[in-house]
Amino acid sequence: MILKETSSLKELSLNNYLFNEESAKLYEEYTKKTLHYIQQFLSQRKFYKGDDIDEIKKDKLKAKLTNINDTHSIDDVLEELNELYIKNAVSFHNPNYVAHLNCPITLPSIVAEILATSINTAVETWDQSNAATFIEQEVVRWICNEYNFDENADGVFTSGGTQSNFMALLLARDHYAFENFSINIKQNGWSDDISKFRIFCSEKSHFSIKKNAALLGMGFDAVIPVKVDSKMRMDVNELALEIEKVKQDGNIPIAVVATLGTTDYGSFDPLETIGKLAKEQNMWLHVDGAYGGCFVLTETHNHYFKGMEMVDSVTVDFHKTLFQPVSCSAFLAKNKKHFQYVSYYADYLNPLESKDAERPDLIEKSMQTTRRFDALKVWLTLKTLGTKTIASYLESVHHLIKEVYENVKSNDAFEVAHEPALSTLVFRFKHKDVNDDIVHDAINLHVKNTLYKAGKASIASTKLNGVTYLKFTLLNPKNTVANLLNIIKMVEETAMQYESTLKTV
Ligand SMILES: Cc1ncc(COP(=O)(O)O)c(C=O)c1O
Image (cartoon, rainbow, N blue to C red; front, top):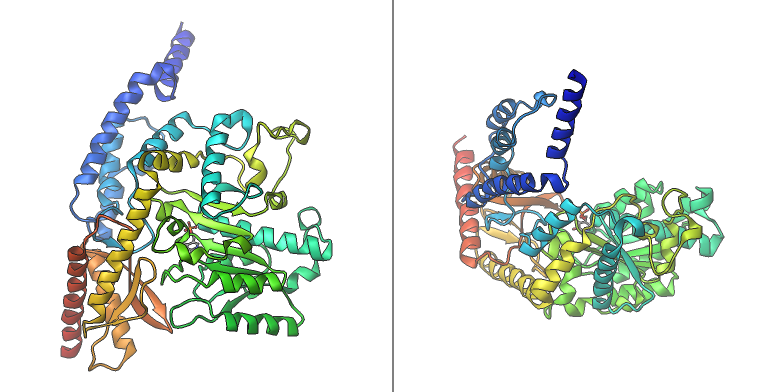
């Protein structure tokens, strides 16, 4: 009797907690309750409650995180979560959030997230993914078409720009080793010749190039940073010189990374000239378009993509500039055969003998095994908004930064580091009577930290020639010039206040 009761109780709770037809009503109820908290999050006026670590620690204690062995009602747990997380979360859609490459997200992409998470499709093999495979392929085809890549190109969704860049370096390395030395790294592993391989990128390229070279066993030193010109674009004369130097040292140039939209400056490396040099030298050409890649949709930035016909691979981040939730990125290869360097056939999952061109297993192109259906977000966004709306969002953020640039440039209190090509501005508060960069560094960092801690504005900082600068990254087309100039005003006032306290010490 007791045994029977226990087993039916267990059955009941399983049916309650797991997503299935019996829990459909509960699913609806949970969703409604969650929506209530999301509405609360949306109604928060500030981008952030303010950084008070003691408060957050108190919330953490209140949240009884250690108590995970017990069961609680969804209401209690959501309330705890509200105190600990939701109330403390940073809202990227708030116009005073201008720090990093986080964008506001489209409503259709959220609908897609709900669908993809609830249905929980894993897209690695046809038998798990089915028609979702075609949706990912359709989105990949769409972005390939935007870059004028022919049917021989292909791509795959990844977790982000870092992983996409990893795949690029891996394909470049393995392809060069195979074609030029008949070395099969995938099969046989390392060989001494590979220690001589060198990859070139601008000194302003993303750190993931160096990090990935290290993760691939090639080391930071395999990456040769190339100097930039006054517009923060790779200087192609310098690239040619660096390639010659590498050869004279007995090393082997294998790849160039052209960044279309550098992280700090939004600058576009001159793709066409780099491409010609890379092809003359039999090198792989990768485009890191994590930030700038979606600007191919715009009229303002389309010309930067001249030379794409020479490119071997591309990174493009939809979670930066297609207004998609994290994670959403793609890696494209101009020649789909090159995906062979990451493919593997496992008996239990995608046996070679079952390979069927009509029913592809996307795992063949991916570093990941189990993989989310991230392509659905892009698909739903494109089908509802259309590319013209996305392009107008991107053009808006570019125009906003131009306006801020003109204003800051004409203000004596500031020094700007560059003319923005995309949607970032690097600048610093600089008092004309103070000649000490250490003092200016302290003031600018103080401004950034003070505005953040008070929940007034989130601004990033970076370094140029060892000196600290502030950075605006604009990805919110709903922002306004008036609001942005108000943040500039807060920067100036906070800097002046701090400067006066320095003088009185
Ligand atoms: C140019 C560039 N490449 C790669 C990355 C890495 O992208 P993720 O953060 O999606 O890994 C970034 C991130 O800011 C970037 O700006």
